[in-house]
Image (cartoon, rainbow, N blue to C red; front, top):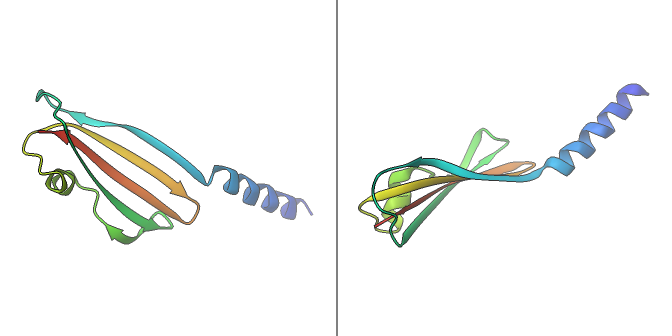
Length: 92
């Protein structure tokens, strides 16, 4: 019985915490902040199996035609079964 209760509590806790998101700075340079923003995301299944996308700085900068990167942020969103990890690049 205790095992079943623990399992139910674990399932409920996973459901409550399942869709959490964080965002924060990854790095910054001495370049002035520009008006262009590039973003690229990678999606994974069960935190390990890549589904599609890229989240590297070069691809994000290329998407917005940024030549001089000033700030790089990262966004991480967890949806129980899959995750989205994005790289956001600011620059000129």
